[in-house]
Length: 212
Length: 212
DNA sequence: ATGGTAGTTGACCGGTCGGTAAGTTGGAAA
DNA sequence: TTTCCAACTTACCGACCGGTCAACTACCAT
Image (cartoon, each protein chain N blue to C red):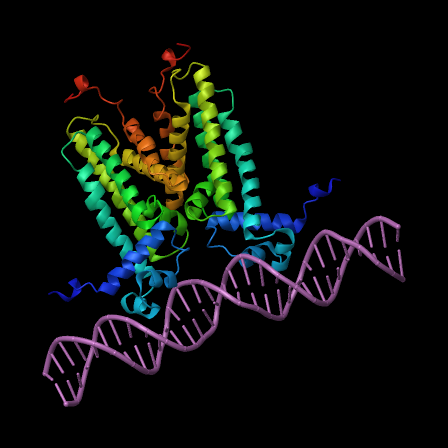
């Protein structure tokens, strides 16, 4: 009933088209004409619903991040497992996310936020700032998972959760960059488990684990 | 005397301009008109020396990679120090490379090859293939450094140098992505030492080192 | 002096870019 | 039935894209 909940068919089609095309290529390599054609809509309609190409991409990124949180981040990093188990789930969910996106979009997208952060670095735009904010939010998920593990005694009390989360983010972005460059989702499975190695203690043997 | 050694002033200026602009922004965001203006040359001259924008960028990348090898890779990864020392030098040289580029170009470039690999992924062009080749060459430097360390007994004989070099490359690319997104060269110093952590043994204490 | 040639120039090409605005349509409220 | 407005279409804009081309200049070998 709330008017803002009425999502027009055209509006959704435009967001979906922008998502498919921008994830498959890049921001600059996709034009509004192509987005409209892919959505089965004329250009004028795009500018009826969105103030600009930027505004459309901005909203697409918003929905994309929410989906990433719902299907990858929360089910893995916030579950009840110990940290290593959560990491395993994260790698697996991320792998499946890439595979699904590859099937839908036609190209393996890597990390859409990392991609745009690189492409739009030194470009003053609202998109650039939103992308940076999403990357920071992603890092926040990592940091909270680490802090939870510290509280549970799985990691030393002195662990620097801020720096560790940054190193995790760097590793994730680097692995996704290589996966996209190679168009190979399995690269995620092969390289991302190294996230464990970045932790301040070696992989904990079962008999060693517990409060210390 | 050899005719091919006569590098015209114009030619060099075009390569330098392409380097400065493409590193500062991206491939798609820089046009030939802008490159020519930055080089103080008219567009016709560009197409006298280069067959296309692609050909110019291709040659720019070639010289850039040679410089990277000369000033970063070889002095660090191929020196006589133990692996940890070589890694420290690598981090430091890379940090200085970013700072110098930031001073010359105006923007922190991150890894030019990683940037282009992302931007041109799923784009069939000669530039894309050259970029992939340069990334693979970079990984080769890492792998050789690791294999040398194995031969010297600094790492276990069973070390998987191919996979380790891939994880290093991912970490380097990820850190440079974040450094570029933040336009902060110190990010390299803060995050890249994690390369050590990816090695199959914990940081070796001095009294522990030696053949095993 | 003369012809050849590498370098340079400016005008120009078709195509595409993001964006605009006037006009048409259809359905719900009055 | 009339009015009104959101949804949508069509035609168009100026700017810029990578690239072409014929003409011109400067210099060098003959």
